[in-house]
Image (cartoon, rainbow, N blue to C red; front, top):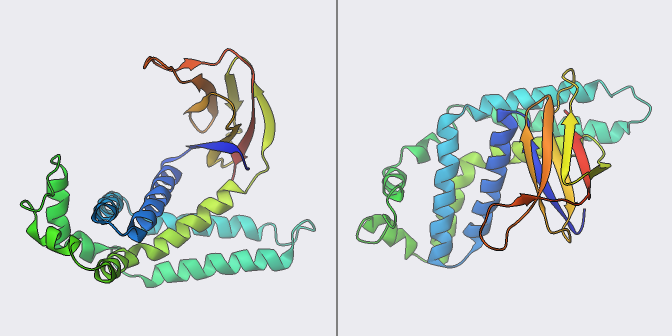
Length: 256
């Protein structure tokens, strides 16, 4: 929606990790395209964050499970009169192709980059404020001073193992976000509570708020019940306070 700010609240750990990776991939693409050394430093920093998430999670398995679940759900709609069969067939084909590419990628994703001496050195020094200066990591400094074509080629090579995961996450999150139509709601005195049917696989709560309103959405809760508070930022560095006015907004309970 134009002129709206969207706030999202994932209802399980899997979607939480997917959204974090989505943001990191977007940041990596932005900083990789930048021409300055500061841009390239930021791109490497984001890539290290991506690698850190992959170390702690079996993402390939999680994504394949999610794609299989989407495939089963969508196949149930195949005989529905309200579904465009060609459009559905295209979506199912896209899911199938994405799954095949992930299955074909054997071994732990990005393992070679994660085990490289350069990235391990940068990761270790990054925990120290300003710890990646030229005198700390001369090899890194040497790479940062290379021409743009060399740096961009290396960044593309280092990020390539994550390309299929990035595409799969984008596909999954797009399905989830568009799985249900938004409803118009009103938060009386800045407060709204949602009760979710425990028999339905809700994945994500989305709140769309007109950006002209001087507040933000603070969402908390779990898979059965969520609370939305619309908070007004303080101008004197105090804690935000809950709005006393009634706040109109759009709410999407995302399934799949």
